[in-house]
Image (cartoon, rainbow, N blue to C red; front, top):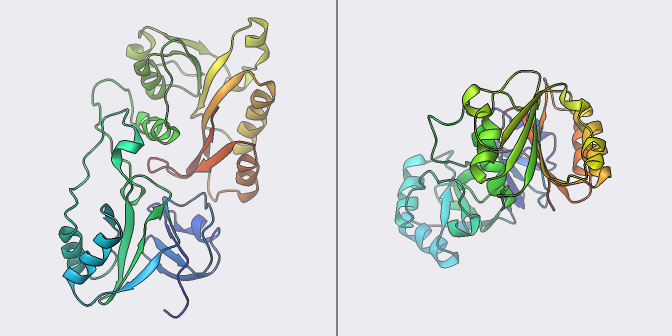
Length: 306
């Protein structure tokens, strides 16, 4: 490996191809880890990005641990080769294994975590500046087996954790494509009021929760004018609706232009190969970002927060 490594990108499992189409200067691909000779970019399909990584020569397990500790305390291993040697180094770092988090958990309580890997027996790659606060970009929450009707709630757990805030008591939220109610369950647990919109009904145990209301209708028929006429502001607009990204973009643009809603978290779902042009349109919306979450599949998540 002759070229200098200037950035590294960890792809979601099974989704290396869209990430490889974003990244230039690819030097090598090691399982999910893509090494590049170019400075980092905010690649949408990366589960974690290692900014400005450094290569360190090492002559032993103890030497590797000592050099990593001299830089900072918290490290996460991504292992693709020499697994036993890498694991022994990680154990020397005296870093406790990550446990599932309760929701909500402030990200600042987790500490700054770097990422590292072995390139060969005598060389490691390390970065103290990574885009994901989770180990290898993998968010893990204490799961609720009884309350939510499906596992989609974990996607909203992750989104709100990354947002650094949640809906609160006194706020009004809209959740489109809400059936069977996993997202409405999270919003209600946060203490906010939620209106869920879908053609299919909510799970009965969700529709009976205090503060949850439901309308059976086409989600895209819901427009800001309905709330402007009532002089009702919208604090959060959530969407996990299955639709073409172009349709979601057009509808969201109306809501954003209206200025009535403060916060947006929406899933952009793709059927087959993701369309780069529509992703660029979402990313170009002022004050927004587009990320691949650990709990996303062939989809991205759009954030626009006040």
